[in-house]
Image 1: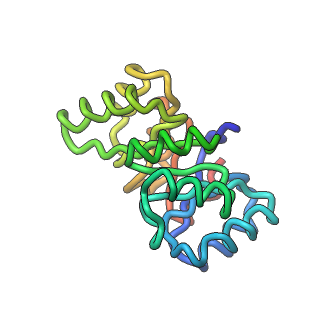
Image 2: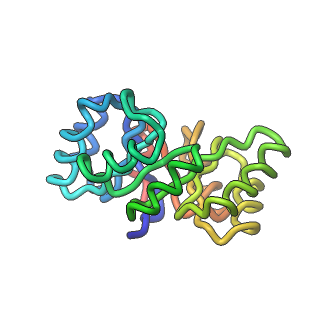
Length: 182
């Protein structure tokens, strides 16, 4: 399974969830939820022909270990996960879930460390936050063979364009006004 290019809606609130289910987007990201709500959200999404990615680190009640990933895979059945944790990337790949490694690039040292972690854990995709620095997107795509998603602080159409032009395959955003960009 591959992520599409363009904008990936990232859901923080239930009213956004309802809105994205009515959209033409094939893929959605659930950023925050409680474990008790998650299965029904995934089930509703699948019934609406959406593929669902879960931000593993932000699910309240889910432990970030091998057993948490196994539970998520067997009981909840998302199509993929996002996480900052290397052990969760490894476990997700073991269970054939699409694994997106989130990296926060705050300075040169964080960039260097992020590239090392990307090489070590070999996620299917890397999400760079903040996604506003085209030079960083270019550097990570040049240093790895892993597709990049830009995310975080992207609020304007020209920011989406800059990230995609710099080599990102997609842009994740919770800004509803950007969800309809093609």
